[in-house]
Length: 234
Ligand SMILES: [Zn+2]
View 1: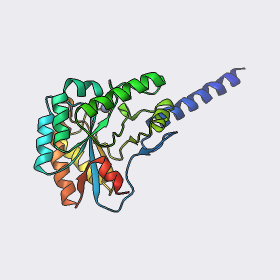
View 2: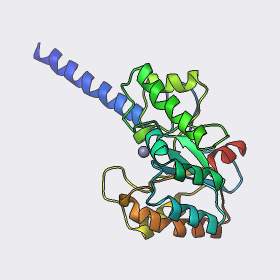
View 3: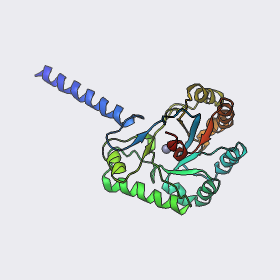
View 4: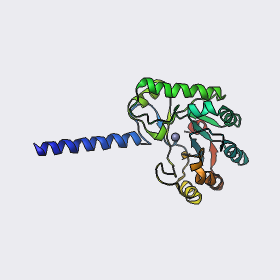
């Protein structure tokens, strides 16, 4: 009896671990299209910035991208886009891409289809209100997805955009800007998708790393494009 119980506990642990690994995978999901990197020979990279927009840092980021003539993709939340529509419109007007990063940034692992639909559709409406005309790509908060979210995305013909380079860690303290930039420049390959968080105070090191990353990528002969442009190169 105890042996059976032990086996069941072990089985439960193994299955839970498997589900957790699957939900956090940047390269695999059960339904629909997931992109973590584009298969191309061309030296193209997509810089992607999660969360926001916020009034504090949007202008600074846009100024930098304009200075280096670089296009990027901003995965924004619906709630912040609604609240900071001025900044969202500025991002679109500058020629960058807006992507859907849910309405309220929840973990969407165990949500019902109704909740998933509200998180996604409401955000698309805000992105359209900001003037973005292209295909709206999706990125789940914390990169988390399991069953219903991929199923909903597949059913509504949305592509899930993950990343192959994320120099920051989600939990730990962010590294210094030189380390963050060095990490990106060491890992970059043609078709890479880089994830950075720039929109809050906690993104100080990442914002300081951005010009170093852009200069470094240019020195390596890379051109920085939106995710949609990168997708056409595959
Ligand atoms: Zn996020």
